[in-house]
Length: 440
Ligand SMILES: *Cc1c(COP(=O)(O)O)cnc(C)c1O
Image (cartoon, rainbow, N blue to C red; front, side):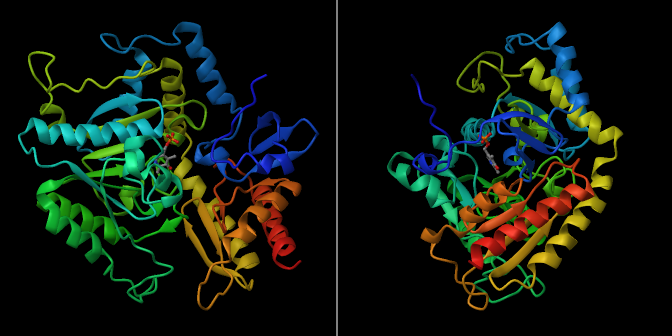
């Protein structure tokens, strides 16, 4: 009998806390076999946008299955892939005119790294072999993606087999080492990456960052100005800018893509997660005509981009991505979200702002994060072995809310279709769980 090994988990925990077996899901609710329901406060790992078992998305999939489920994507194409390219070109920065398909976020990141490196090889800038990323950054967990990760937790065990790339100190607005607050910030922290880029400029292919919000690194929100400076400097030095919008994309930060806050156009943009509203694996890499042209030739040679995956351009995934973009277009999603996330923010501020261990509450778009610390003044975290965040997550489950913690950060990232009374229930469950864990 094969036992299942679950992701991002210490399996020993499940000797004490059995896995929750989900029977079905509808809208923001997950239902288990014991008759419990849970509000999906984290959009099933940041992917779900319009609720579970959404009728419009369900229909798009069943219509697609009836005609074409999958076809080889070399030498062939299909209607849904073409439609997806057309709809994406209406919403992404207008310098991005070429799109490459993959299935998961990590492989989109791999593709962007390979393309950037290969581009420089093709145009004769052969010394460019390194990538720069930010501390606390997260870009997935395959070998290449891990090599640009700024999170030791996921990376350290593999450090000896990873390509050696450069991790720069990152902006950290809560614990700013330059002594500024969010209000007084002048992005002096940019000087860290500036020095790295200036002194290695001829060796670097690209800088890869999550624009504006470092998700897995603890929902660290940094100013748009930093991204503007980064774009200006990378352009000046002839270095690519890869924006990993895998988590920030599709309205999560309040704009369709986070780069819009800074009005920045990247050389590569990686998309996944919300692209199918959380239904099916699909990712894409968008790039410029200039990059594309460097691979263009008469024959398949070393110059061509030969990367491929078996399920490239899957028709069912494409169909649900097309429907996702149509929902954005037809249902005024970004505008309607504003009122909802403002309401969510105000409830969170009301309930959490005065609590004695709440260090910072951060919001952007439909993301709110509460960072819990032992000492509010010094911002000193709790000893991690106390598992404050994890215990709050466990308590919240008992109260009908899925709020999977990131260390001692509790975050709210619900599907956009959440209703005000469900927001109230979610925040209330989090508040009660906090009190249970920290006042006992
Ligand atoms: C989730 C994530 C990835 C990796 O995507 P997978 O589909 O899990 O491989 C990469 N970058 C960011 C910013 C992410 O949040």
